[in-house]
Image (cartoon, rainbow, N blue to C red):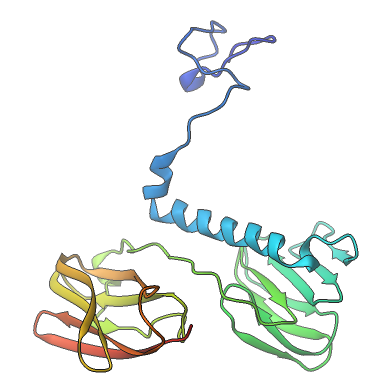
Length: 252
């Protein structure tokens, strides 16, 4: 790296201190890494950050000066933040260690709480709930139900042969009911010819999601129904000579 007011970012960090005209400045505008958008794991992380930013912007409990904040973030494995506002309360908990932790999560009040990223309901009888948190696992709980953010998970998982699915499976879509997008996952024990289509209640095909040869593993496809009306739809997976169907509910 170069030094001084005009220092530059040396590719490879060779440390020779010589800034060339082609070297980007340390404080200059950096190019957007659009290639990250094509990496399933980086894209998933981008969506999570986007959902968190939108949540902070849209709900006063996360940005209002009137919010009462209680911190339990001393250096330890599990750390918590509790927020209280007239609109709703929130509890944030995370496991910052590399081992699974049994946590006593403290809430501001008893009742039904909702996981922001999954919509799952948690009944808190007192103000404490025991949770097992995997390394790096976290939750954002709110006292009011919020729309579940649409996170497209990594589309496929690389596995060794011994870890491949043992059968063709069409999983229930999530979320369901949905508006306007939902994720559809399926398992393939081997490379197969696959078609994945969505039909309305009259049997008319309204979307063709997959049509071709797909590798073994677990795959996820997002279905966007923004152009369709509310109602019942069916997703049909044809893998080789096997066929599976699941019902979905679009609620607008």
